[in-house]
Length: 248
Image (tube, helix red, strand yellow):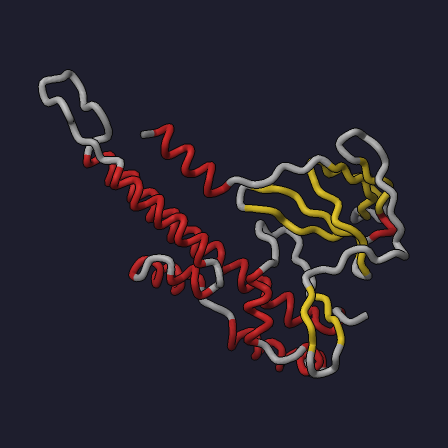
C-alpha cells in the first residue's frame, strides 16, 4: 500500500526535468555584482521584458525572467553555448488579444511562485476589464479592482472541505483538485482488511489504515486549495498592476 501511495503521489507532482544552465549577474546591496548559476532549467527565449526560462519544482514548472543584459551565457545539456540576442524577441509571454485596440498585449510572468501562469491567467483576464482601461486607472482604482476579484484562501479551503474540488474550480485548477480527490477515493478502495483471520498479520491494508490514508489526501486537498488560491491572487495582482508596463 505504501508503495502504491508513493506512486500516486509521484503521479500527482511529477514534473519535467530540464538540462540547460544559465549564468547571469545579480546586483547586491553593496552595488557589486554576484555571478548566479541556475541549472536544470529550460531556456524559453527573449522578449521585451528580458530573458525567460522555466525551472521544474515539486509543485510544477516556474516561469522566471532575467534582465537580458545581465546574462553571461546559456549552456545546453552538452555544455554547448546557446546563441541568443537581446534585440531579437523570440519569446512572447502568455499573451492575449485585445479586440478593443487590436494589439497583442503581454501578460507578465511572476517570479518565485511555484506555478506557471497558464490557464489561470487566462481565466483572470476574462473577468477583468481590457488592459487599456486598467492602464488608465489610478492606483486606488486598481486596488479596488483587485479587492473585488481576489479570493479569500481560508474561505476557499473551507469550501473545499464542504464541497471537494470546488475551491480548485474557483481558481481554475479543478483538474488538479479532481486528481487529489481521486487519490482519496483510491486510498479507501485499497482496503483489503484481513483476508485470512487465522494468519499472524493482515494480508493487506486494514480499514483503519485506509481511512488514515484518505484523511491524509483530504488534508492535502485543503492545503493545496489554499496554496493554489494564494497563487491565483498573486497572478491577479500582477496582471492588474503590471498592465501599464505590458505594452512597451
